[in-house]
Length: 170
Image 1 (cartoon, rainbow, N blue to C red):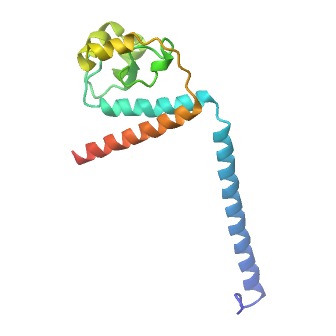
Image 2: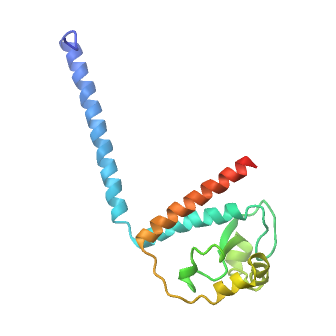
């Protein structure tokens, strides 16, 4: 019925049990701390997380397409997910997928501030006039909530996963 053979084994066994207990306690504390940090995370952090997943999806969706503004297909440059109507000008369209398309980073998106002069006709050609007018004429006021952000994160994660599975199957 005994689990150790002598006092030295008992000491080693007790030490091993103490180490395991401390490790599980530390893991529990880390999990609780992480949960508390998530609970107090401000809306701005949630929006950045959603934006990261949204941009990742757009880059995957438009991977084989050229830059929406200049038409470049150079594989050696970095591409962004560029908004037709900027986040500052139309924050309610921040995650509208008709408003976001692949755009070359340094030239069009950064140095030419989106290059909207060339973005517009290519966007109309890509999504059609009806959907384009819906974007351009949308002036509603909307403030995202944390719950909406959580839903959007889940939505974009599933869309990314689905798109990656399609690419692997093809």
